[in-house]
Image 1 (tube, rainbow, N blue to C red):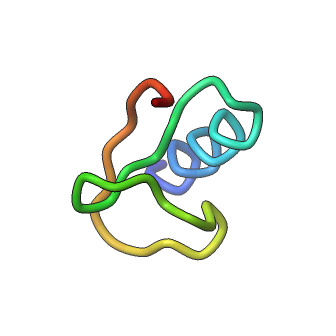
Image 2: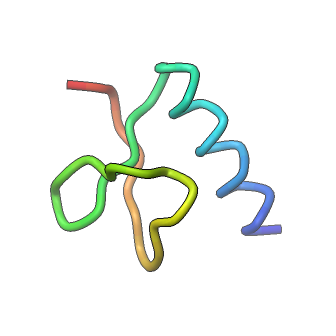
Length: 43
């Protein structure tokens, strides 16, 4: 189930609708990041 959420987050990130953040900074490569992440609006 969480894999589905992550896959959708990556899809939305690639389309530019959301940003994925790790440790307060946007991730560089949404396909390879690991660990806890936050979703937000792109800066």
